[in-house]
Image (cartoon, rainbow, N blue to C red; front, side, top):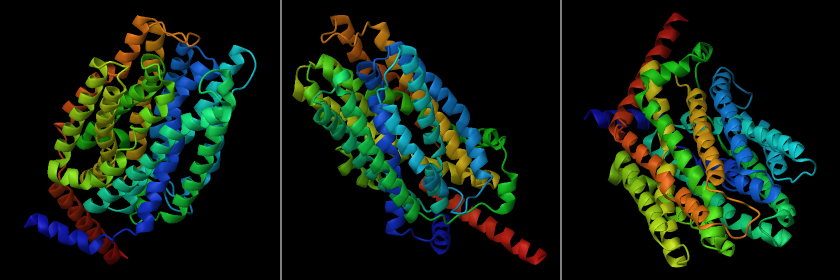
Length: 473
């Protein structure tokens, strides 16, 4: 009865989002990922095999850049929640940052000449700038909580975002190797430099157009009051982390997820090029990382409804582990077996790392229920902090691991021990973090009924506050 009453209250006060709003959120997510995923998937390979950096230098750069991001994220989130642009609290940043983000992404893949130290400084400068802009676009992650509090709408927004993002992922997986080779006649080495630059230029233009489209389509329906905005402070981050248990669990999972995603994605190019000895198959290998999303993402609400949040996360984490184990124990020259393992790993990763973003809106709601503050940007920025930390660790591990196993980019054939190290990096190493993530979600407390109850109580509290303010006026 209580749950039905909560749902009734929700139906009365929560507007249904238009298709164009959902599409705008999806295209916006895809546009950021068109650039971000090229960087996270290919930049280490570009630095070591095309640009000419030493693996250890590239690894250290990934670590330092992510530390900068991690520090900047919560500071920036507090700054955003205390201000409102003339286009809304979060929406305006899509317009302000679209062009700089696109330009810097292209500069990251430009092979500048000069001494090694100069090239290293250029790489640091462009990568730091791009990473900071990616952090500054974090309000896009806060947008769903400003658009709706309805369970079904949240699930649909997440499905649109994931579907569109995986369209972009498919374009990246297949398109980057195809275009680089098409433009320059090579995928690795100095001969491919022009191809990498032009390819990133194409994706940057697509990302720019998509961010501007998202800006025109998205609308914010839930706003912080002026009093709540004034009350926002940096210390609220620590209050949220202390009081908001689902938030703490989500942060820990994001760190682990981006560690294992970074390791798996960064290792793929090396595994296909050296272990399989089939760089021509890289575009198909990567394509399997995103192609299943077209079937899986529309099924997210169904999975959640029939498996529950915990069942979904634990079950598909198991599928991910199975795929990686098939790749580890199988013969790298058995293309069918490798692709089967990759497909299963991709299915598990798409569902677990895709659905995890639906939890962000839930923890915003939980924080509003507990503290009376709907601090979308603070929570989103701390999630960005967790992402940055995960990417820092996940980015530095492959670089140093390559050094440890004796990888040499100038050799067409690697030693047997190096090949086994690449295999371990691709499959066994991520399992540690996947298992830790599964343990975390055993303790996640939010359910559909608790979400409905929280939303109803928040609405009742806000209505009472409005009535009391009207009486005072």
